Amino acid sequence: MKRREIFAGNWKMYTTLSEALELVKGIIDGLGNIGSREVIVFPPAVNAREVVKACGGKISVGLQNMYHEKEGAFTGEISPVMVKDAGARYILIGHSERRHVFKESDGMINKKVKAAYEYGLEPVLCVGELLEEREAGNSEIVVEAQLRAACEGISAEQMKKMVIAYEPVWAIGTGKVATPEIADSMHKSIRKVLAALYGNDIAAMVPILYGGSVKPDNIAGLFSPEDIDGVLVGGASLKAKSFLDIIHVKL
Ligand code: PEP
Image 1 (cartoon, rainbow, N blue to C red):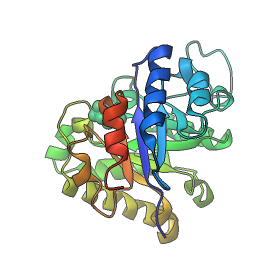
Image 2 (image 1 turned 90 degrees about the vertical axis):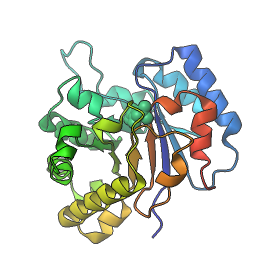
Image 3 (image 1 turned 180 degrees about the vertical axis):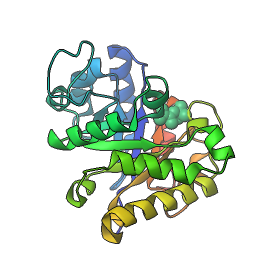
Image 4 (image 1 turned 60 degrees about the vertical axis):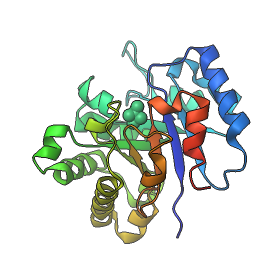
């Protein structure tokens, strides 16, 4: 079975409303025929509803973060219900900036994954090791632990709607990209963990994206190996031209 191919753009804390709408227009204008490829953008939450409208179903929309509770006295947070109500389909969970800058624990990430399914959102779950963990030879162990913790209590049926992004922390926003060999071997190890948890059929269905300094000039190598089903792009997704060059790789 052919897995979904996904090209996702994480806009982080960039773009005002007018910049976001201009970016969406640029992407849609240049998209052309991308076959069954799926494009997702993750704008800042405050502009979600307008971005969903501007995407007009041609591009999917997700948000970058949420709290796990439905509602309550949690000043500054947004709930899964609000994310859904804004028209988003996906929710990014466990991005390395959330894990390391905002100190989100594996337990919090698991609660968010559960909340995503409870309220009808599809999680894009990020996992990835720090530089010191890679240098110590512990990348697979770290990523397996993140994966097992995030998926605790998640059923095989729910996993069919999961997207995983392998994002080595040392490659995010640093210009240091993982080699296709490193990415492919980490993706294979992630798929092995999924197979151990949910069986081969489910493991074979889950798209695994690579993220970390993906650019137009390195996408061709990264999109070659059999276990890389797409990419999650930060910086290079903020310009329509560079994001389109990535989306159009080997079409
Ligand atoms: C990201 O934000 O998920 C990311 C991979 O960023 P960049 O492409 O800028 O490294």
